[in-house]
Image (cartoon, rainbow, N blue to C red; front, top):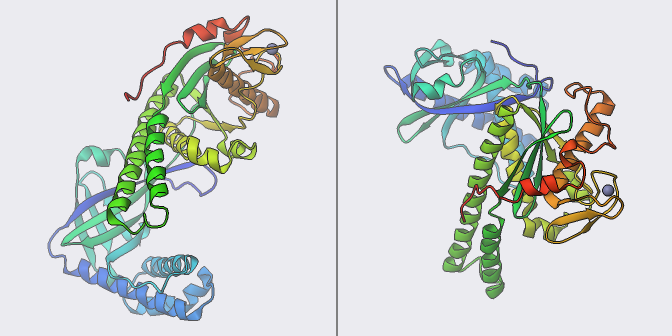
Length: 417
Ligand SMILES: [Zn+2]
């Protein structure tokens, strides 16, 4: 098993959270959890009274021997004071009071447990040389998924008579060598996706409706309620409930959509072995479009959520994701770079060369071209030598661009509204 050095390779981290049944008596394990909690509290109390930031070295000097004399192992001690430190820092950070621990939970370093995926058992090294063996209560498939990953830390908890463990796994991501480029343009009411061969030829075009309008309806309801009870909405139970209900709908609609879309997009990208090009939303914020109103109304947060899911699903499949500044991608002609003007509903026309095309498709073409321009110039591997010159139009939109328009006339309906 290898442990990738942090910061060198991109990694995916996932937790396997399962119930665990102790084999035999659970007394020692409970004893350990109580001891652990009290030790964390002891460190919290002392760090709190010191009122100064402590380095890891200082913490070690202050607490190591005390913790060892309580019966902890070396890595237990480290976990205890680091955990206490993080508790104090976050409480201070948000102006809270000194943390008081009630729950029984312990973070355990990878040196202090053994995980056997074949027998689905976990052996924990406890205080004073004791050990506890636990059986993981879950399906084999859920565990199998992590074979070949490296596990590095776990959290064991005791809650209402049951033991739970969260085992953290990580895996280095080695991107596949892309054979095509998929550019994704996010809009208020649709997501447009185009796949280009490295030669620039358009291979596939797809469009998905977004549930943005439905989200906006709930948003408007919230605003109306808040306007009607400008001062009191927080305090009247029924009013607050109504607002919470709309908020909950917004969350479930948006996450549900983002998950589905992320999965669909990543599956398609895998089929075409695509590198995925997304708009850099941070840059979108800079260009003035991302003011507060835009943020709230048109939901930059929703774009972020979609991108998060696309990126996550892509990384799961070892696909590379690149973010490109989207500035001007829907106002410049992909043929000659001239300024585009509106020419009917969502159709743009170039004044200079007469190129006409669908607005969102043009945006994907521009994103693709910008990616090629940026990376072929830098000599980054992964782009074929025959990638088009920046001023050569991708063949998919060569000529008058109608070819592109025709293929996009039908919407893919991902989300029935
Ligand atoms: Zn033009």
